[in-house]
Length: 524
Image 1: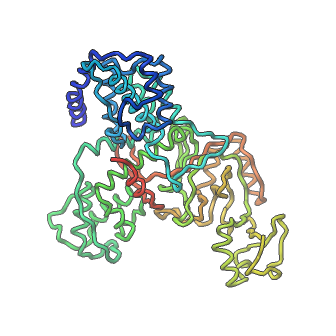
Image 2: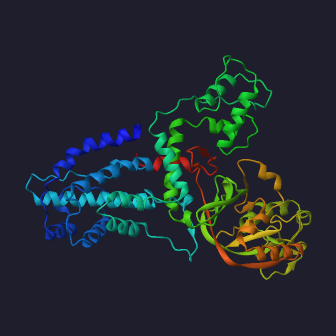
Image 3: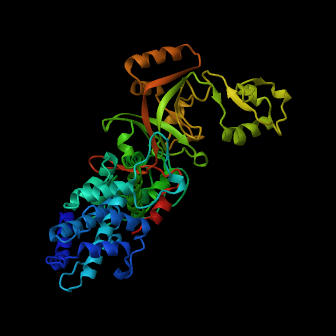
């Protein structure tokens, strides 16, 4: 109701502007064409109206024989309403100003300039909605396999604008990302921004608070948990004993924030509890922007990994079919973001140590103790695969050698590695470190993605007959390659907030510290 009242009030405020356009002075096609090539008569222009934007305007008007686009009052009012609703997408409507189309000045040039500037805001809004307001920084840029070309958001938004000019609401609906992740998070954010922010104070640091423990911070912890509805405050909130109700409330909070729900108040839980309500709301805006960057890639992905959530999902016909936990790269060895195609499996893989791990981890350990090689079943090989005697190598300057570990139970890749084209030497794989899947957050690897229940993933990558054949090959213990008959599109992305169909929010720890730079960069 509040939201409806907001838009009705906005429409009432805009009514005089639209009324002024009921009898607009019609600009000639020649005049519009002339201005589109020289906008200097229009005075000070927005910084966003650069050469590329002018070229886009020329194409836009060229499709309609350089006739005015906004001479219809109903169309103009509909555009005003759609611009206002961009606030629900976490975009700032003030970035898309709509000049009043005055019809009583008798000045065709002013009317033509207003029409052009209105079209610029229309096109700019559609492009930001379809492809994102910002360009992703290097840390969040998505690497794309050459055989999966990116769509041109500028060209796509222009096509949408031209196709739906008579009905701007249809244009905005077509430009808005259609992925379930975006639609649900947008709905949750739209509901949240209509309400005043919750209030809570930061909790002080201290020793670990474990079940059945005592802590003077417990009254403050209960107040904090009650602020978001996790707990009803007891009559005696001054008690410093860690009671079962408070423990359950903390566990529920931990589950909703991507933490291990052990009921222990430690540094990770304190960090999440102490994020302010304002930052939480801005976090939703930031993740709407991330989902705009992903665009249709989310709809096309068959295997989807949210690195922040450390979760793998299998999607078919835009329906979630299966999910499992994964382990991703540590902050200093971040898992890269990419879109590619899974096309090959390595069964009972050997492990060739990647260059970064070789240089930063293995070589220092070998220099300290040459027995490290035998202890970890590592062979030294040259680039032709020939085994070398480690005693003949100068480990202070080893040259072009590599390390390889034979297949087996101790191999870091387990029974299977899932391969896809990428320049980072990363892949999905099994792991003997199964106990780490019960942790959260799960940032333990050197960049590759360790998959829990990787054997079950076979059933989603392969047909039933293929999966049976692959399992038989794995049972032999021999290292083999298997090429998929039908490659699967893989998307590895990063977002730290999600919502379900009921609007319930799920947060994930910002393991790579990307939220704050994005929040600061987004205009308000």
